[in-house]
Picture 1 (spheres, helix red, strand yellow):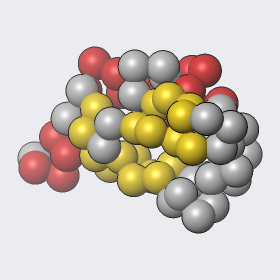
Picture 2 (tube, one colour):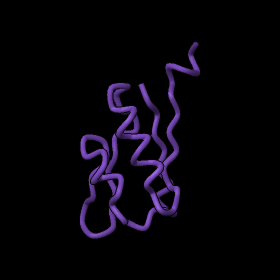
Picture 3 (cartoon, one colour):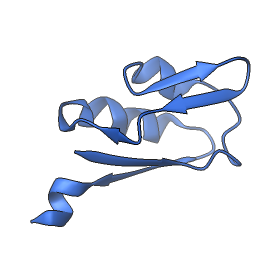
Picture 4 (cartoon, helix red, strand yellow):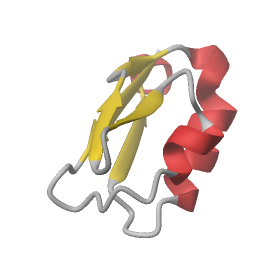
Length: 69
C-alpha cells in the first residue's frame, strides 16, 4: 500500500495528478483536490508519475511495503 500526503497549501490546482492517476486524485471545483491517502500498490507507477509531474512538488509518496520490510 502507498501512503500519500498532498500539501494542499502548496497545491495550485494544475490537475496533472488527476490526469495521470484519476483513480487516486480528482479535482473538485476549480482548485480543490480530493485524493485517496492510501492508494493500492497496483497504482504505484501512475502515482509516481503524478507526483513527478506536479509542478509545485506538492505530492509526497511513501511505500508502506518497503518501510515494513
